[in-house]
Image 1: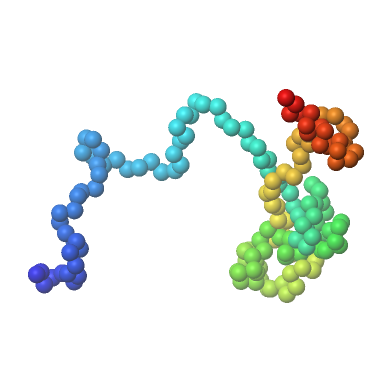
Image 2 (image 1 turned 45 degrees about the vertical axis):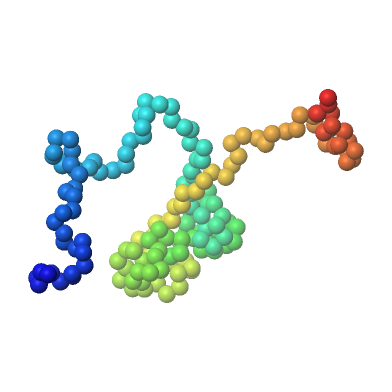
Length: 160
């Protein structure tokens, strides 16, 4: 056995391993970075079924705040202060002073209004919750009045 080998198991540093795969010409081509293009680039694209909405939400009650909200005021629903650390985009509990920006002193209460000059409102991206199409209505506008009416309507569908 070789005394210069640390591990004596079979297969470790064996020279009879196959060489890495190469191109047909024998040259190694580097792989292109990034995602692979779809198989048929010229084909039709599927429509985006889920639309996204960017909006600010209250940190306390998750109410969507309207565009142009004055963040020096309070939340219209729950009354929580909007110009506070928990509403800021730079708020991160795991960092120093719980802020991603370099602030000189720690703000002790994170959910009360403050005068931080680095404040920028947190904006979230969510799915559009408004229905895109109205719900389908029944064919006839009358609802069945009794179980027998429903049974007879069902049987009428499958007459022989």
